[in-house]
Length: 117
Image: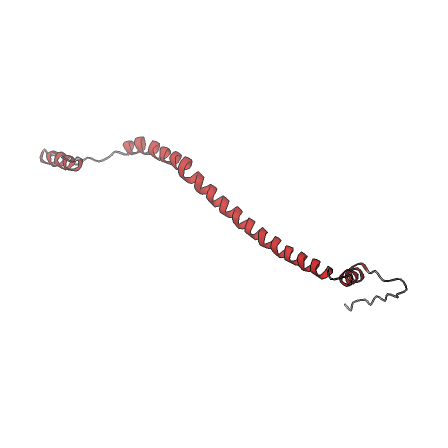
């Protein structure tokens, strides 16, 4: 005999005896419901929500790190191109010194033309 058939048979006997169907009182709901919800919330917090929140934070950090890696890779490529430009002899170094630092060779006359703005 299963539990379900026992319950159904018990309800049939109660109906035949003229008893009204059982209803759960509001006090019973509060008495058993509040602790049950509290225990369930505690279990979810310890085993469910905590790891989920940790996963969300980890994914956010991962996205930030990927963005930082992409930015650093592009910066690294720009620096490698600059190093390659300076490598073949002294011409790249001399060009950079003239343009960025305003240096000149002995005996040269430097003329600065202001930008039109």
